[in-house]
Length: 245
Image (cartoon, rainbow, N blue to C red; front, side):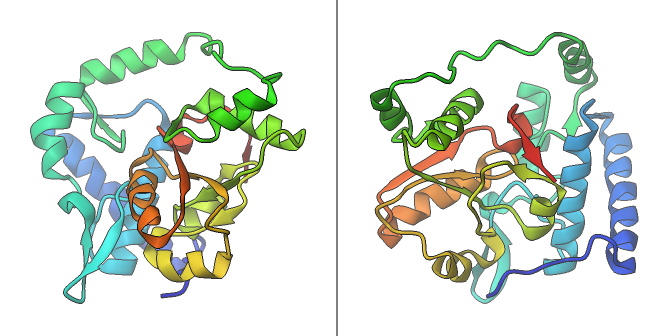
């Protein structure tokens, strides 16, 4: 399956987006939740839901990979919005669903207070040794400050890796990490990966919206012969480095 490109400016997508926002408004009202105070999180999830409705005719959670099972598309972990794990576990226990769009009022209030604070000081910085960079790029899970340090180190020729975005084309257009090398959407993963011609010996770091799809892909790729796979743990939504749009 080739990469699917949806025109965000098309009448069809605009209409579907309006219906999706009405849907999430209804979910919020039904469960007594609130939206995430970070509007870009909500918009990204709503656009992903609209995209999945157009592609699969299902409101599959955009933060989880969709696979074909018995000839039909199915969300990994059976995530269809509003998903059962969010309703029964994530929101009661954590205060927010996995994608971050739906929150309890208490979680939203705490997030608003947090957003008023200064950004945390990174625990990693540029100026790492070559040995430290090579150790960092071999990690299974990579934090946002580590990703920033690795991109800086790569520019200096201290380390080599491929940064691969596994979101959809529309999400890439909305914004991607500056320095990302390839877009390999999960909806067309196997074909697009083959077309990307990434060496199986390369160091590869994957990322998506919040880290779920990329973590799933990281589990698949070793079976295809790729040996060095890392995952940006919390995805682009928590990335504090430079974004290209």
